Image 1 (cartoon, rainbow, N blue to C red):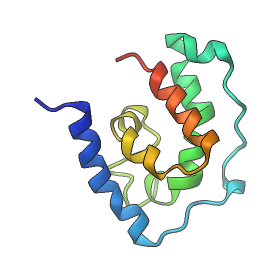
Image 2 (cartoon, one colour; image 1 turned 90 degrees about the horizontal axis):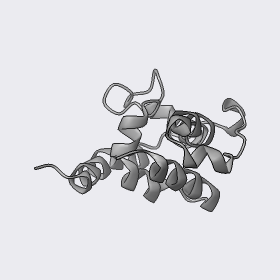
Image 3 (cartoon, rainbow, N blue to C red; image 1 turned 180 degrees about the vertical axis):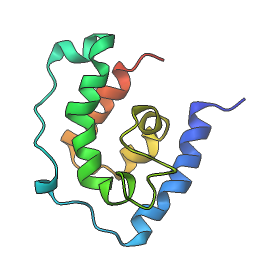
Image 4 (cartoon, rainbow, N blue to C red; image 1 turned 135 degrees about the horizontal axis):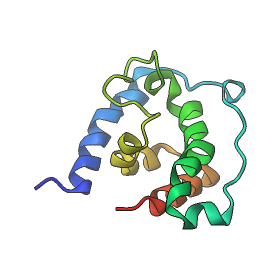
Length: 115
């Protein structure tokens, strides 16, 4: 049986190439500014996609978009515009996020996703 931890560990192995590839993350200007999620957004199931779009997606585009957005070399295998893919790689992604605000937004979204 494949557990979420197993999937995350394999994701970390696959994503290790991002840091070693020498590609630069996109500039902040390339990503629309996001507004902080409202408290109600993390409490309700239907708002989870909106929380991803507003809080997580801009961070991933800024940090990982060069490879994981459409046109990037990793997009076919690991498209970071797909919330299911991002959730399956959450531990690996969290290790790469250095800013506390980015980690907090990601963790809030991941916790709000129904399991």
